[in-house]
Amino acid sequence: MKDHLTWGILGTARFALGTMAPAIHASARTRLKSIATRAPERSAPFTERFPGLHVEPDYDAILADPEIDAVYIPLPNALHTEWSIKAAEAGKHVLCEKPIGLSTADIDRLIDTRDRTGNLIAEAWMPAHHPQWARTRDLIADGAIGTLKTVTGSFCFGGLDPSNIRLSQDMGGGALYDIGVYPIGGFRFATGLEPQPTHVDWVLESGVDTSTWIAMRAGDIRFNFHLSMRTTKHQHMAFHGDKGTLTLQTPFNAYYWGEAQIHLTRSDTEAEVIRFPQVDQYIAQVENVAAHALDGTPFGNPLEFTRGTQSALDAIFAMGRANG
Image (cartoon, rainbow, N blue to C red):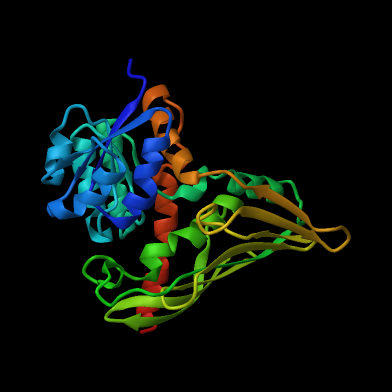
């Protein structure tokens, strides 16, 4: 029985270099063997940082390598479903950047492939692997803020060059596809509820949304969030009940954008701050892939969860397009 997973990475995305390759390298039961790129000059930062790393001339070479057990896919959004299916059918476990699909039909294809091949296919929605979210879910369920009434959230950044792939309509760009999974997934993870849109307002540039303001409801609970690729860096999630509020200071990029903290505020007591100073959710994510592949441990972010978030995104896009 194998005691570790050997990984390959399809492509040389900046995020792979700065975050996910180091996470794979740092995980106790994983080994990074290869990257694949059709532009060899882009491999230099990887081989400098990880001596001995193999560089393959194309993605299929990694899928054909019998030593590779798992692949990480940070390709442009429109390629995620296609290459996740190819990798699983080649016998590899798959961790693919979000959004792993651009519609619920894509997620259904991925679920079918996962079930047919027996290989893990998972979206790299890393908050599922951070303990601040499990703690938030438990606090809400235990009544720490009373009856939940309203949820608010935001995820914003700026500074994109016009040529950035995140602004390409053909490649599945836009704020909703790129970062909408975070507040929607956070709401669903913490509450167990399925929100439906009631209002969609967005700014479009070259056919993709660069800023959005979304209102949703799940029963009597209202959920409002803002996404932008055109403002200063900011993120938060807040859960407002009739007896208190839970605020996550760095809900999505914890540790990298700032320390993960939950602020529990009640009107009759001093605010409580719950800190998670050293948790790296990317390493935890990789370690959970290994635990699933090597030990059979259930994976904390299955495609069924991903499908629910994508279903909400499908409904938002349908409403936005209907509104013009």
